[in-house]
Image (cartoon, rainbow over all chains, first blue to last red; front, top):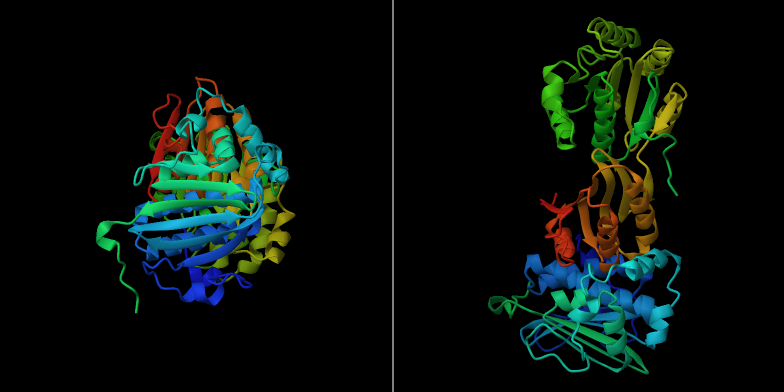
Amino acid sequence: MSGDPGRHGLPPGDSSPAGGTAARAAPPGADGSPLLEQPFSSDSLYALRAAVAAHAAQAGVPAGQVPDLVIAVHELATNAIRHGAGHGRLRIWAGGGALHCEVSDDGVASPARSATAPAGPATAPADAAAAQAAPAAAPADAAAVPADPVASAPGGARGLGGTGVAASWLAAHGHGLWLVCQVADETAVHSGPSGTVATVSFTLPAARAEPVRRR
Amino acid sequence: MTVGASTQITDLAMNDHACLTYGELEELFDLTAAFVRDGLSGGLKVLWLSDGPPGQALAELARRGVDVTSATATGQLAAAGCEGRLLSGQAFAADHAMGWLGGQMAACRSEGFPGLRVAVDMGWALRPLTGIEQLPDFEAGIATSLAGGTVSVLCQYDREGFDPVTLASVAAYHTRSVAAATYHADAVLRICRQYAPPGIRLAGEIDYQAAEPLALALAEAIRLDGDLTINMSHLIFIDAPCTRMIVDAARSLARSRQVRLVGPAVVSRRFASYGVGDRPGIDLVTVDER
C-alpha cells in the first residue's frame, strides 16, 4: 500500500470541529484527539485506504497488521457507500492502548434497503456472486457473527457489538463485516434514525502503546 | 469490453508477421511464453531475440511452464541477444538483419523442422544506434520474406517506449496486432488475460467497483480448458466481494481442474480467511511482495 498522506492530503471543507487543519496537525496522543478525520465516497476509497495505511503505521500498528486495519476500514466504508448514505466519514484516534477507527454515515440502513439498494451497475456481479455462493462452501458469514449481535462483545475479545437495525442487516447479509470481525480486535456497529456508526479497534503492541512523536 | 487486442497470441497463423505491443514486462514474458509454448508443441523451431540477457529470458519462460531444459537441449528453442544478429557494433542495417533472418530460416529447414517462430524484442531500437531509420525497411523485408512460408515473426514493442509515430509507421507491415486481452486498466488497477499459464492477471488494488470487469475476466477464463491460474503477484489490495467472486469461480470448476491463486501475503491472507488454503483443487501460493 503506497501510504503517503501528504500525496493524497486531507480533504478540504470539513465542517466538524476536529476536522480540517486541526486534524492534520493532531498529534498521536492518547487523549482521544483524532489522528485522522476524512470524509469518503465511492470516488475516494483508494485515497482513504492509503491514508489509513499511513496513519496506522505512524501510530504504531505493526507493519504486518496494517493490511488488516485497511481492509476493516475499507469494508465499513463500503457498507456506508453501498448500504447507507452513499458517503461517510472516517475518524481514527488512539486511546486505551488501542487504535480506534470509526466509520459513520448519516443514511438510514434498513434491512429492506440494504438488501435491495441499487448501488450502481458495477456492483451487480458482486451481489450476484454473493447470492450464488454455496452455503456449505461459503465462510458461513452468518454463523461467524454472534447469533445475538446486539449483545456487546466482551472487552478485549474479538467480537461484535451492535444496536438497532445495523445489528440485523450485518448479520443477515454479511457485507464484508464477517471479514471485519475476523481482523479487528473489537467491532461495534450502532445504527439508528440518524445513521450508522461502526467502530473497529486494534490493540497496539504494549511496548509501543505510547508512540514517540516525530519532532 | 475486451480492448486493444485484435488477435490473441494463441491464434497466430503459420506465416504471420505479428506486432505485439506490451505495457509491462510481465505482459511481455507472458505473451512470449505462450508464443514459445505453442510453437514448441507444434513441433516448430523457436527463437527469441530478447532485450535482456538470454539466460534470464529462458528463466522467465521456464517460470511460465515452458520446458526450457529439454527444448534447448534438442536445439528446438534458443534465446539470444540482438548484437551480432540484428545489430553489429551498435549499428543497424536492414539488409544485414534480413541476412541473419534468412540464414535462420535456411538452417531451420535443413534441421528438418516444419517451421520457425521468431520473437524479437525491439527494445534495442530505443537505444542510440546508427541506421535506426531503416527499421521500416526491416519490417517491410520481413513481411515479404514470410509470405506463403512456414515462418512467423513476432515483433515486440514496448507501448511506453516507442512513440506513436514509430508504432504507426511499422504497424502497416504486420499482418496482425497482438496484445493481452484487457478487461480493465487505469492508474489503480489492471485486469487482463494471462496466457502462460492460462488464467487472469490482476495488478494494483481491486475492490467492488471493478466487480464487472472481474466477473467478465473470470467467466472467460473459466471457459478455457485445463488448469487455471489467478496471478495476483502484483496485487496489493483486494476487498471481500472480489475475494469472494474469485473463490466462487474457483469452486465452480470441475474437480479435474486445478486452480492456483498466486499472490503476496497480504492477498493470500484474504483467501486463507475464506478457507481456500486447505481445499482440494485450489492451491494458494504466497509469493514475495515485489
